[in-house]
Length: 102
Image (cartoon, rainbow, N blue to C red; front, side, top):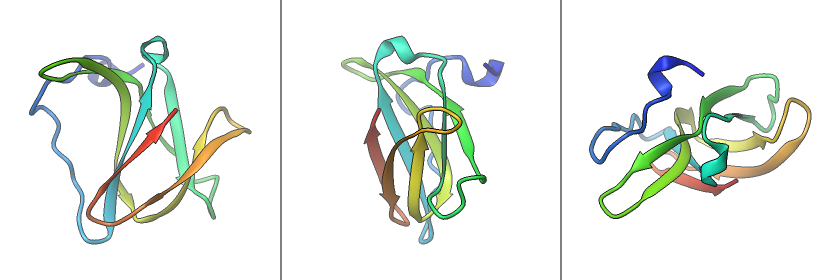
């Protein structure tokens, strides 16, 4: 796990980089997945993967565990369970945040 991704985030500490043709993906997980690297790829280009580690996100009233991957071009994505097994798929729309449940 990279040092810059291992610390929890707090309210207001994350800036989204989204626009007309780019989006963000939040993958919600259980706390026991903290540190897990989750990979995603465009469904038509499975070899072009990007990833991020699950981290705690401290909100005003609770702590959640999730991955934030951004910016991503709008389109259809595969969320990978491991190197060879898809966990599921999701569609990202430009200018928005898509949430996915692990």
